[in-house]
Length: 304
Image (cartoon, rainbow, N blue to C red):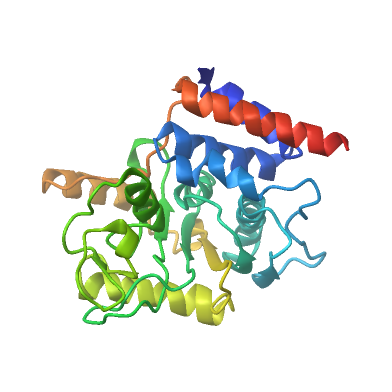
């Protein structure tokens, strides 16, 4: 086993050091710690020693479009998040649209970083078609996760949800293990319901019409406005940061957030906080072994 903090330090150094490397390392290590390995250390399969960092512009602007097809995706998303932090403080709001993004894992750590900086963070990612629209039988959009975070400490809220009933990782896991899928989440090539992972040709949207509309919103933003749609191997990502301190001075947004949290919990709701882990936690032996294998490969390639 290895301590989370030590694992983040080691992976951050292997990724080149700096703030973006640390945020990317945190996101990947955290996914493994949450027992989501396909969204964590396994993403290092895409890393190469010659992967480019996020392209940057000398002139800061409130909105930008960036081609990340030659980047290591977690570093690109981390770099975009950090860039937005300063830009949102300058302009009050900032947005970046990334295209050509390979697998990068969970959105929660990135919007959570924006929240910790005192901002409202919103992000979404589209991908190759794997989800049918509500009432349909053919895949049209990706699983299209959406995330939002606001606030610090106990009052912080982090929403991170896929618009589909399952993820592609869920289907791969079920196929590898031979485990039947729950009923009502997938269709086969003929548009018929199936519980056999090997037969899945399309997933169904989460919550019917609500899930399909959320997926469509993400597709419109990341796929259409952001230019990501149509890439069979990569995805489009949008990240937006808004500074609520720019609001009318009579609006105490932090007090309003705390009041909403109290009302939500009193009403019986679960206040989502995005699945972070304590720095004192440890990775299990299997994750630690995988990490050491990747680090040995990465440091070896970096020396060549």
